[in-house]
Length: 504
Image (cartoon, rainbow, N blue to C red):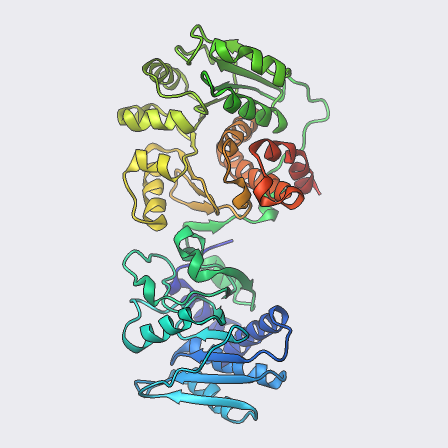
């Protein structure tokens, strides 16, 4: 699913109007009908009062149309139209006249000063002040209105985008002048800013409302930003050959663990096996041997000469994929082992955790990364590679630059994990939940990605499918256990169900 800029949404509207063809006011009516239906479904209690705050542009026109439709559905509606400059857009003006013809709606047109209504916890506020066309922070009276709304206990629902929030970059925005919605009803597609952590308090939950914007127009718009869809993952998942055996399903090498961190090795190894790898060899310090042999008897254990840390690389010729980093620590011996692996390896690797930390201490080694390798940092590990980032938007752009510079995949882990590709695209993953914010979750992902690569999935396929399945398994675990009780080992336990869900 494409993610468009605010300007591109306007282009798509115009394309639809010209090529469907449909009048602008009728397209607005279509969007407003979808918003009204969503509001009636979300808030079935007809006794709750609805207050619509409408601006002078297209978003305000949507709000006035929604006020009319809600009133026609028997809801108690008050509407406030902010016309402080004495100029409304054509469609907003038409909907103003239409609303005046409906009984039971109290319309207040604000031209100078607003007597702010008393809002209670039972009230529903529909925020239709500003939409995707906003290009600068709200100020003056509009900023004051937003602050009053945010201070109220009313439930706020934003049409298309919370007023004051930019569709992409909010680095220089005034966060005190952005509506804090409980629910955002986004027309047709999500906005990029919805997918960043610091904007969650403004967006709340968001729902996509299809209104039939032109598919051909959408296809013509180019964007590097995408939200992964389930149907794509069905297409990526391969069917295992009928005559498959362990020798044809790939041999993965995991370089993991150190004294006290055998758990990371165990989780990554189990995940690689559960992801379908035919064989998994684990290169671990001697101290981890017994734990690996007992807990993962299916794995082949290759002992390092050192009892505490990985101290030297082994030959990778016979492995189809290599994953390195979880729990290995940052000793100078391990750093030199990592350097040796990077120098010897020509096919893509999965690099995570302490291996990334070692790279941040030796940035010149980044040049040794095989093309199409997969790096899986959490935000702090990423900043070790690219420097401090002020917000998620900057973090995404720096990760994107890193991916294109070294021709690797950079996965910025988190809610809506970002896959930054070597070609500059950014793919946002929709699966996963807060229950996965637990130690070992990243180790599981490393094992999964390495297991998929070993089976012959291309890096672009492995990273998309692996991250989607990782989140889906976490979702299934949270559904069964509750988010608070999910452990990393539960993600592995629900991997079979995740694979089966994609097969279905």
